[in-house]
Length: 330
Image: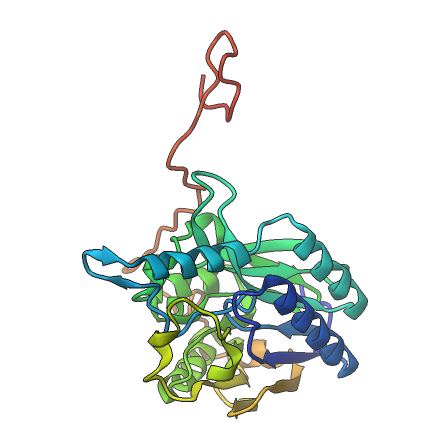
């Protein structure tokens, strides 16, 4: 239950140090300190901030073939991804604890089960003491993302209670999935984060639509990226020859529950987007529209959400204990 009526939110709009996990963590820590100095109670980073969103790269792949240089870049990207737990996460926790703010961080996460080679686009939720409160793995990577990222399951449709309201959200084009949005609304999210890699004008309409539909604050976080932010020694560097110098123009913004901008959108530069939120605006906005409450028709429409963790393989110990791995049903 909300116990505070006002808060300050800061959105970080910045480029990652692509394929360099340690340097990306270091840059995140610098922005955490800067946002803390602005009085932020909540700090939100873009999608895939650690170790970056590989916009424009093909990883040497076409239908029916993968080139050796693409496999080389893929291996580099995989090695730069984040394991949970890990020393990198510990560094983030220490920096977050100094801010005393809630933090939403976009990472590329290595699988902690299966073949351990799958990567996920993941949002991590941290408490003001640095505790990892939850994670959300992107349910449906978009387009070519499906070559490099796996699909999350319903067990990570995370919503985090805070003194400022319930914190949660979806990643990039997951926000075009009406049923996924409905699940988050049913969880009571009032601080809806939408980290993204989409800088199109239409994305701003998306942020405003979600705010109006969910009667929630929407916090959109995107990177600002140029070609100079890419490593010069990529095996597939030729992929970028015909790309524009400005690869992602940003567009981070904070929107109120009636769809009005409180800050941003910020374009063509790195920086912080900061706004003070009057949290009582949520219930005022829901007076005439509560999408999973008094404006719903459960006698006509219902949604079932499977939040059970999914496993491809379950190993069960045999009676002699020869294989004492993950226990399954007796």
